[in-house]
Amino acid sequence: MNKFIRLAGAIALIAFSLASAAQEASWPTKPVRLLIPSTPGGGTDYIGRTLSTKLADSGWTVVPENRPGAAGTLGLSETVRARPDGYDLVVGQTANVSLAPWLMKLTFDPAKDLTPIALAVEAPMVLLVNDASPYKSWADFSKAAKANPDKPMSFATSGTGSVAHVAGVVVQDASGFKLQHVPYKGSTPAIADLMGGHVDLAGTSVASALPLLQGGKVRALAVTSLKRSAALPNVPALSELGYPNFNMVEWYGVFAPASIPAATADRINAEINKVLQRADVKAAILAQGQEPKSESRASFAAMVKSDSLRSRDVIAKAGIKLE
Image (cartoon, rainbow, N blue to C red):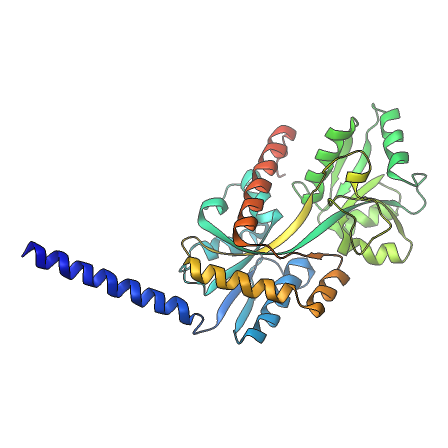
């Protein structure tokens, strides 16, 4: 009897494994939902909708849905609770995956409850001054900041705990001067006050700064990516200016619930990478001031882990807390 029970159990297990393998091989058999944890418009929405549209060329139906709220973590939490079958995905980025866990209480752990599937783009930060500013270069700004240690230069960003804020903390630690952080509710009011002469320096994404740079209303001193931004080839990277290997960018990628079948995850990764390698997609992303990035799942996962741990250390050392 025991032998019969064991044999029946083994047969059932084999049948289940074969059924699961067949299901994975035929995936997708229905529309895939891609949650975008932001309001329509902006970088996150642009990436999510671009991927959704272009993946249709593979014969897939990908339905983008905006899920703003909770500093971009609402969409992540909904994905965590979804079935790990590949039909529920979410756009994750530096702000909600790497920074949020160290700045706010979450009901989930992105490192354990989400699976990194594919990196999509990196968005460099750019350090700006008013076009009428006396600082013509980063060297000018740095020299002035060091000359007046009792009067820190003011540094505007889109908010406390933003990528630009964290980048500014790393910059000042490596520079030997202090910056007085001035948080705003978004990059638009921060840049408006920069142009009005109310702050000395501002940090924002290249995408947000491009129209103002092209209009001559602000001046770029440096970008925070490892290499120069393709959209701003004449603006030096901080790595060229005495900050070796400096690289603080906002990245965007696709995540799935934990325990998604490896074969399904690999297939999604491969199709997203195909999309990112298309000439029309590359050109469109570059025009937004972002950089398309194709990575293996393992490479993306390693990058996410490293970025999250670095964010933890910077936030803890600087004592950054959400207001």
